[in-house]
Amino acid sequence: MMQNLMLSIVLTSFAMIFTSNMTRAAEKLQQQVPFFDDGVMVRVPVNAFGKTLYFSLDSGFTVSAIDAGYKQYLGEQVTTYFAGSPLGTDKTLPAFHCPDMSISGKSLNFDKIICLDLQMLRFISGQQCDGILGMDFFATNIVSINFDKNVLTLNYAVPDNVKNTFVAIPLKQSAQCYTLDVLVNQDKRLTLMVDTGDNSSISLNSEAWQEVFGNDDTNVIVTTVADAANQVAQSKIGVIRRLAIGNLNYTNLHATFILNPTNPSHIGLGFFRRHNVTFDFENRRIYLEPGQTFSTPDKEDMSGLHLIRQREMTIVYSIDKNSPAYDQGIKAKDIVVLVNGQNTSSMTMRAIRRVLKFNDGDKITMQVRRGENVLNFAFALKRAI
Image 1 (tube, rainbow, N blue to C red):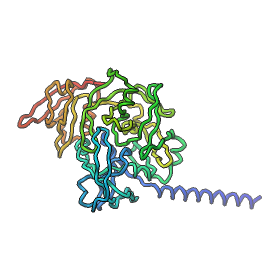
Image 2 (cartoon, helix red, strand yellow):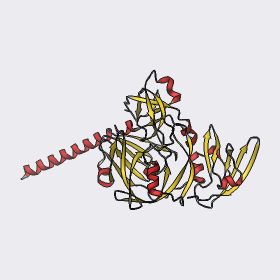
Image 3 (cartoon, rainbow, N blue to C red):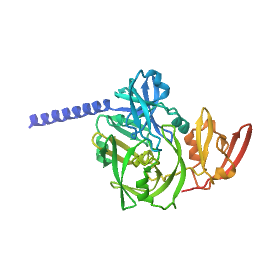
Image 4 (cartoon, rainbow, N blue to C red):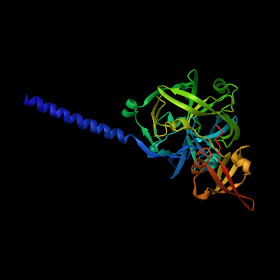
């Protein structure tokens, strides 16, 4: 009896030690880094060329990319890559052997990397953006993004807590992209491509837009959109009243119209921000856990201003007609100096945009520089959708 008890204690102790060692080993196979969400894209620090660069996460890009400013370090071009755009401005881009790049010590080991000018992303976000981590990154890593803590984790396997508590959403693979099925307004089934580079919650091509909205423009507004290839165009946004994925339900998600008729419809970053999410593309699963902003309604700009940041200047790139700012006389190319008395040079672009879409009816004061003149304006925000 005593021998059996001693054997049981030994085996229990061994099991505890083994489990503890396995846990520590698993932790060593995880890489964690902070990420930076500027309201336009999610960027992670990448080590390359002996320095820290910042790459956006974009599962809609098949191949990872680096900014044209680093082309001199890439050697000879090895091939070309055709890049489709939601704006209908498809391009053929040069591709190179990938330089040594790593995240938190883990080598990325891409076969090739494409090169393109990411200037417009930097102008819109107001932040450093040196490259894009595309589907070749997501397909070879199990990526967990905790939007509540702004932490990205590269896992050796899907964590048990994720498997046990998150909602598992099956994916379908189509060529080099992955899609999931959603139910819209309780009676329309759509297939959407997973695209973390799309800042909208949902983006619909012409066929899906017609199915969801038909010819009803009651809850549709015109807006300005841009892509990673420095293209800017006029599009529109509509409201999806109800959407369901698995047993998760959403209300009043905003959908952007995709101008390129050959592009698939997307489910984008605006949607994923509502969750803590694990992407396991190899096993065709996404795991979703409602996060702190799960029920936060989608909001669009209520001023009519489309702003960019060049050097330290905040500039009106374009302005919507009949919007509050337009009606008060603010014009494209005006340089915004103050917003509600605060110098814009001390504000991030995300902070400025939050002010301009906070609450319907909020009073805004704005000082702009137009040539040699300094002008002061005041207007009330007005919800357009």
